Image (cartoon, rainbow over the protein chains, first blue to last red):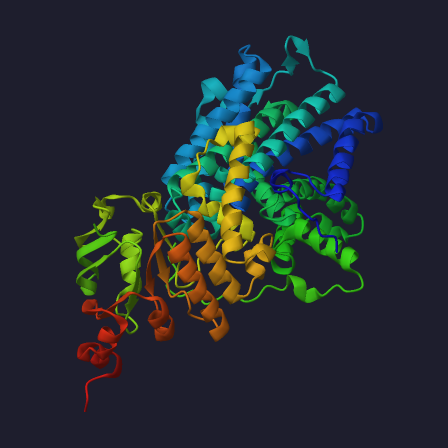
Amino acid sequence: MRVLFKTSYDQDIDLLVLPGERMRVGALIALAILAPLLLSSYYLSELAIFFSFALAGIGLMVLTGFSGQVSFGHAAFVGIGAYVHAVLVARGVPFPLALAAAGLLAGGVGAALGRAVSAMHGFYLAIATLAFSIVMETVIGAMEPVTGGHMGMPVPGIALFGVALEEAWQQHYLYLAVLLFFVWGVANLMRAPTGRAMIAVRDSETSARSLGIDVRSAKMTAFFVSALIAGVAGGLLAHQLQYLSPETFGVGMSLKLMLMIVVGGLGSISGAIFGAVFVSFLPNAIDALRALMPDGLVSQAGLESFIFGAFIAAFIIFEPDGLHGRWRKLRLFLETYPYYKRATFIRQKRYLKTGRFR
Amino acid sequence: MSTLTVDGLTVAFGGIKALDEVSFHVEPGEVFAIIGPNGAGKSTIFNAISRIYTARAGSIRFHGREILELPPHEVVRLGIARTFQNIELFEKATVLQNLLVGRHSRVRRSAWREFLFLPGVRRGERAARRKVEEILDLLDMQHLRDALVCDLPYGARKNVELARALCAEPELLLLDEPASGLNPEETADMSFWLKDIKEELGVTIVMVEHDMNLVGRIANRVMALAGGRVLSVGSVEEVQSNERVQTAYLGAAA
């Protein structure tokens, strides 16, 4: 097993220290940069949708993975971002400003929701966020003069500083840049006091308080950052969908985001990305499976949702740490072979927790 | 002036009085132990000081400042840090991260600066690590630095929790059963560390503890509680020989 011998605090603080990590992340970014040379414009726009979902997944990861606050209504923030962005762009507001406004407004709504639900946990929080997203869907549908209601609204094309980005490869780089910016930002936040306060609130609110963390404001910050990122993701997604309708941002999308972070592995940024890869390309895999299934099953409605649900259940039962956890185990297996012990990852039972406070 | 002055503290849950008019004071630099049978209200005192429980009556003053007016997260800023009976660590974080959270009340924060990781943030992180490193050295925990808390055995967790409380640079340390669940060797280590903390860092300690051996070794004064009332305050010998204390622990002579 490699042990990094640290000789300065900066090695603690820096993001990518191990040569292996640097190589993997570098290779991924290089691959993303080279993608326009390798893929047709159809797959590039698929990839742009994937970038948008990965970004929304990172938003949800901040809230659920790092701060421990469940949200089954995150698609609502994606929706707010998408509509704000589309409406502003349609009225001639420049792309960067509209995207920033979409993020900030979604973030503001998120912070307000966060304040309202700051005393809730578990089921109650899940229901409250679910209710919020249903309400938002209705509100967007009812705001017909602005949003086009249930008839939907078209989204104008992207123009950056007066230059129209019509080619798929131009949009690809724009989306990649936005995604990388937020990945970097969230990674920064998580290695600084604010991010650690979120982790503290996730693991023990009581001791977080006793160490001086204002739990309510930490939750509001988490909701703000999370909803802001989801809003920006919505703005990006709007251009790929080209046509918005309230139903797009319903419970189905929220579940998809939740699936991404659970499958990817709660509490890691790379988990959000892995999960987005998995979820985005699951429909293709299901399509491929369809060919193998008997006709009676293929024609069943809801087959895709069923398989989605089955995957969530399977991950929760067999690999609660998600793809990220699986990857860590595989790496340790290779590094320590032949001395790998399964017991390394078997957690001790939690110590008796009588008289725990929330 | 006393470091901590508790006066007429009453905490009740419905009709049950967990603490009934409890008064005591803690002097600067002393180790003050609270003993008593189960359900005596020992931890309740700590939870009232941390503002987890709301007091029904009475006052708790720290250097003359009324604590009962503060929200829970501001207590530590005054210089009061604590540990928990059942260990409340951040399980899925490393020891280092846990200790850095301990610095929370002593650092300035700004989420957007941290998002962009401006140079000031890096300087803050370096300074926080320097401080945390002192505590790691003091408690001889360097080897645990990057371990995940959920991988640690019980005894090590106790020490991590003590270290985390020290990272807040407290003037007053509240320890809820620091030796419970530790073997005799670990308990001996704990008593040396508590002495170090008291003498080298000049921290005043209030501890709830059942291990009378440990109490006898380090406590300057002891308070015995039973049924939410103070039975006796004084030196270890005085309290142990007090008749009411003996009755509370062993029952009345037949």
